[in-house]
Image (tube, helix red, strand yellow):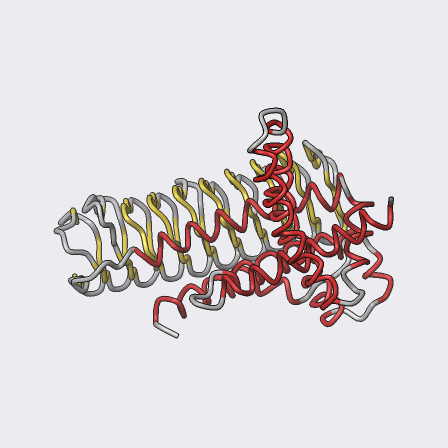
Length: 382
């Protein structure tokens, strides 16, 4: 395992480590989820929707899969979110672990912040009590970080206070790197940055330790980051589709997942046959003028089934992991168990699918297995 891959795995471990301790909690799933200002949720909240807004108090963790998340109230535990946009205006008693295109923090975070995103803004009122680790394109730090600031950022602007060291790697194939340390910035430790270009460090900035520039190695350092973004997009897309499967199509999905517990080898064989039969039928119909529309429909259904098959297999694997982690039979019947089966299953399986040389084989087997389950369900219904 190379060093970069190891760092990626460490980052994912930091983000998803809390998932190993799965507990039953409140579950809210809707197009728009709103926790009112006078509402108190005792325990953790697992939620998903197009928009999620928290104006009240959550005494446990907030686990979110959404397009837009806004927290104006308080969360006593951690915030773990997969989202397009995240805005934190309320206090957080634990850690923030986020994968998001845009993250803005305007409040106090009692522990660490770990983020992978395109644009990260720490407002003037932000205060991170421990460390901050970021991977992304743009970072603007106006508030206070009591611990260390580290990560991989293309463009960084620091106008606030850093309590300990800064260790940043600025890498970009477009050579549009920049690190700006404003005159009002305060750094109570060392400033270490990896960059091929000269940065803009104000002589008026208060830097207590040493300032050190490291020249990057002469090779493409961003291939792994491009790969990571592609994988995260793939995982996020699968999670969104999976949410539709387990909440809107819950009855059908549950029945298909039940089928996956029976005769795995038989299901894989059935899926393999189905995967190649439908394209052949579609191709034959393409040679007849009348059959062209039907061929296109069959081809579209074939592509949809292949994608859904991978996700259903991922949920099934997630269920196995959940059952291993939590033996509580009552929890396994809870709606949140299926939610976590989706989250854990998709993350693990899609990362396995990305492994060089063998990932595509695992992906094919997952497709065949899932297709076999879909075929068995349809056959039993007819």
